[in-house]
Length: 91
Image (cartoon, rainbow, N blue to C red; front, side, top):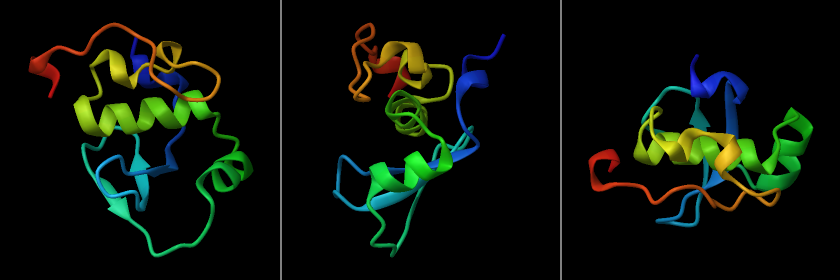
């Protein structure tokens, strides 16, 4: 069973490195910067993406889609990571 099964195809996130709005696509280890002024939470809500899912999407793009960071069950309702410590080999 894939841990990405509960994730949307894509969503908006805020890059932790730059603070820019980015698009994260499930399964891709890349973020695409967007020029959009759309507020991340509003856009994701319109897409039906929960904060936990957005957190997991960003985690997958940053640490790999097989890491605990890509599992929405490792995020609280606000989308903050609360799972196991991420090992160096995922980075």
